[in-house]
Length: 501
Image (cartoon, rainbow, N blue to C red):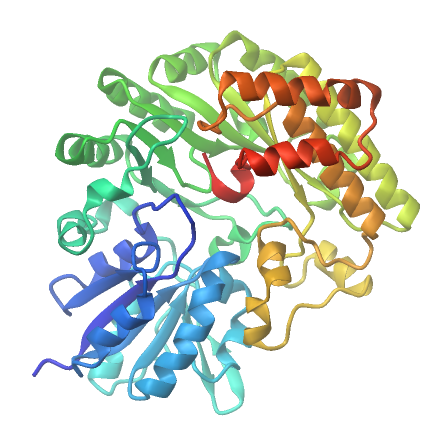
């Protein structure tokens, strides 16, 4: 009997939006032909643990791989991992993803996670399984974190792999387990929206971003031709009509964007991706026009702050400024591309007055953007610390009394889940009054400018909630907007930063 099979688990990450589990699909591709594998998708199972157990009870599965993003995925990853170790103690538990990369100490000290993949696992995971299967040392495998006695050891980071050399994702095998067509969801972009990764990493070092510890300011992308071929295949095979690029930064290379736009244009597909304002501000008008014609419908930009001082504090890097944020919103008015700007409110300051002043400044800055280009979508986060070792901002965070949980089980609590969604900061320098001010403004803003990405909101509902919020928005009266909150709850208003499009 083959006893070295691999079970890959995608913990539940969404209530409605079930997207292709690209992270574990990459790992499946890396061991295809070497080890037998199955995927269990927590988004698609009514009882995921029973499904996992049904495989493990066969005695054929020795290796368990979990992908764990901060936020909702921790809720299943923690108790399931613990129970697997209790029920099937002979298994080897491996975690990968942003959460264990950033919080590897608390993960490995839990006692039920054996290894953490520190960054991409395309080489590290199969090399680890090979070493364990053949009783060979694994200490020199790159991108690995593990315990030796009481010590936690980290191997060196590997160079990022050239993405075109990676094996293709096993869509057909996934389809045997879960129909791929069911992963193509209805969104603002289309009826069958595909989630796709065309690149990994980002060449910047923003101190509030979980991508930085994982990729260390590096970026590698698939060629435009390969991206097009993948998407064309899924369109022809399962009917995809729109694309969400889940890259950390899709628009790093103008040349690649132009090549892809020319290829995808005849397919008549709408698409969305993430970018930096200071990068795209350098794109020519001809490129922006081509992107529009090729179906680029919305771009998410990390504006973060209108204050140059705060941008420096956040280590935003590049050349982004408050004036540039305003200017690019103005520039995109000429095109049908919707800019989606995110802002981080509540960064630490020298005094409570300084923190509150920053919040007030950002609120007025956001309103200025809306006046310049009303179609700009605004996404608001409260500042949540990221444990980027050695960063000046994180040291300031610790000095202000912030601390992460010391036990992995504590991350399962609702307040820490919301922390990872950047909706509950749990930061000592933000008073309840400040948090309420941010949330109340957000409620009024979303009332006066309901997001276009909420496809359930009818024109009548939009007009009603806009009418109710007009006086508040125009007079800066954000205090206790209960009537708007009732309408948003009643109509199940969707916030893009939590639920996507």
